[in-house]
Image (cartoon, rainbow, N blue to C red; front, side, top):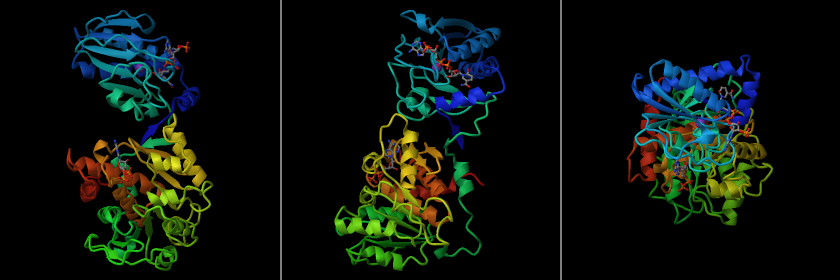
Length: 464
Ligand SMILES: NC(=O)C1=CN([C@@H]2O[C@H](COP(=O)(O)OP(=O)(O)OC[C@H]3O[C@@H](n4cnc5c(N)ncnc54)[C@H](OP(=O)(O)O)[C@@H]3O)[C@@H](O)[C@H]2O)[C@@H](O)CC1
Ligand SMILES: Nc1ncnc2c1ncn2[C@@H]1O[C@H](COP(=O)(O)OP(=O)(O)O)[C@@H](O)[C@H]1O
Ligand SMILES: [K+]
């Protein structure tokens, strides 16, 4: 996992550092110079313009300039507060105007024609916390950031202005970071090996989704569960007697349109995880069923999505979502519910989509609900009530097609069924879902393709 530290948290890390700022600036400058040489493909005779501000970000840029000059680079260092209308010609522009201490607005003159742009810590003008661009910052080809990623490099305008991001170790201790970016190696570590004596019931899940005449979401969730490694998938659409369109290997179980939660609770003995909500509808019977199931003291871990989330809107203090799972089902301590809202559902749950500090907003909602919250988007953010947060950057705009959220719900249930704790199951599902989209088609992707490529995403994970 790659640590992610807010500008404010970075201030505390900095204050706790045993070394003086000049030493850290020296290392930051050295890392910047290395990245510059890499971008330039050499040193002697190359032309570099460094735009440096009056704070430590500027100091990093000046330290890099000193090193590059010693290597034979033709250097010009310009004061960010006093720039000409036209910057001199250059092979590389080093953007060291402002870093995490930026405030206000920044609309500099255009970058020199043809010059590559290297941003120091964050592209100047991009808010290190929110990723919001103020003014018209330069779009970097590469950003060298120090000690840890900053949220602003991952959120809002950050990803499109930062280019390729490299984290340079400058000797600061970021082991206390509360947020991380998930990598394939993490997912590989969390996934249990299939035991030699595996049998299908070891990873059985029950998908309760869809409504008569609206079965697509249910099929996609079931397919997501199958392809993310569930041993057995039971599918029920309340009020629907038969569902000939369901995937072949899925076992259909009939549920009445009303009062179905009791029937589910009666039948969950061998079921390790439940998914509820996609396409269920927003009628009273559906909502009552979701509330009764989620609030039951003897249910397996459950992932709630779509209309299931709407049914939980009034459960503002998490009375239902903090119900304990049945002993032996799910983790002995910690949350047993995962909520997977998109921004609209997030608002319905009383969360704050579009909050300036998105990580804090998701963390707050998880704490209030006593549940893991997976906030869908670019990137997806997962928070545990204990304050841990991960960002999943694997997915991209290819996933913006109807039904992909249903696939994610099923995949998440399958990972819960394989024994992952809710926080890790959510993070792993989002990662695999994003990778599945990336491994499928570049254009024309539909949600079923994402399910179909989950095995490829599982297979490409590094050996643990
Ligand atoms: N944290 C660490 O451990 C380490 C951090 N390091 C580096 O330090 C960077 C943070 O440094 P920083 O705190 O000095 O802030 P920085 O981003 O240089 O900007 C603040 C200065 O700019 C000014 N200013 C701001 N906006 C402005 C505007 N629109 N227009 C005009 N002026 C404006 C502001 O002025 P003031 O508001 O005070 O008037 C103040 O003087 C960080 O990103 C990283 O690169 C590394 O060196 C090593 C270890
Ligand atoms: N631009 C994007 N970048 C990354 N992921 C995206 C993007 N747009 C959508 N997604 C992902 O696609 C899925 C959409 O889910 P959801 O909004 O529930 O759609 P649906 O209800 O149609 O299934 C989520 O996993 C979301 O994170
Ligand atoms: K900068």
